[in-house]
Image (cartoon, rainbow, N blue to C red):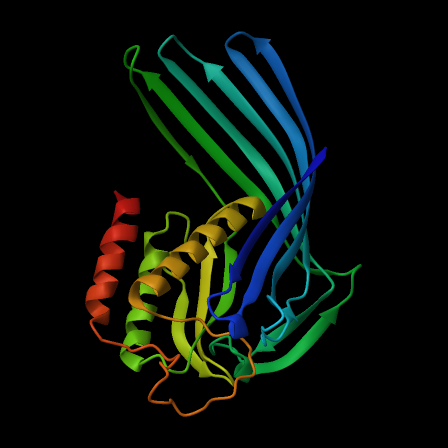
Amino acid sequence: MGSDRYEFGIIGQENPLNSFDFGFDVNQLFLKADFEYRRNENHIMNFGVHGIQYTLNPGSNRPYGPESIVIEKELDEENAREISVYFGDEFTISEKLSVSYGGRYMLYQLLGPMTVNQYVPGAPITDSNVISEETFDTVNTVKTYHGPEFRASARYTLDNKSSVKAGFNTMRQYRRFYTTLTITYDTPHELIDEFVKGLREIVLAHPETRKDMFHIYFNNLSAYSQDIIFYIFFEVPTWGEEVICRHEILVQIVKLANSIGVRFAFPTQTLHMESFPEKKTLVPEYSGGYEAKLSDFVARELKRKKD
């Protein structure tokens, strides 16, 4: 029995007026009971039960410093529960050959409090396509996923330095990651196109993302930003692994934005004035060459991970 905590934060203070403190965290309470039974030196059986309670604070964005005019915003807390029972069996058939197999029955519950939107069937998942909503309180289960998973493998030793191993396993769930990337209104449309292409390359290059199902598009013009929908799935069995994948994806997004000159927008109240001849404007000069910058990013950051 135990607990752990994962935190991630970014402080932006390049411009005092737009300085921000962004962060999120995940807390886990877990209980494990593992058992092993040795019938003989060549036959080992193991079984047990695992339970995890998740509490996720998806994100908060607050002003940083007395001059900041960033509007404070905090997303609602999310809760979930994961329970599984498992068994495994391992045989050593000879000095060179061993085989193992096992199974797990997994139950995953998304818990309240939460408000779930219902969307127009077949339409993009956007605010404009919401047709109704359902509210769940703390004691309610929003949704339950459950079912068996199986694995099997065999290993053959060639010599003291090498062996050959083959195996397969089944997985019943994908883990969804959905967010909106907000970029400033002065971003040229050519740069938006290259940024979206780079985001898709990030998803395709990551080893734990679903490659046949994701949606990344320039999606909306909001009050303070141009919005890009980022909707992907991870192929990992636990929430803890999902958080690691989120971290890796988000870091690559920040690197991509810095590499090609995209600036993220935040909820602010800004007074715009004409530029004065003796003052340098705060709006950056976009010099073009976005396609070449994207190619350089992909070759430097993503191709290396594939190799």
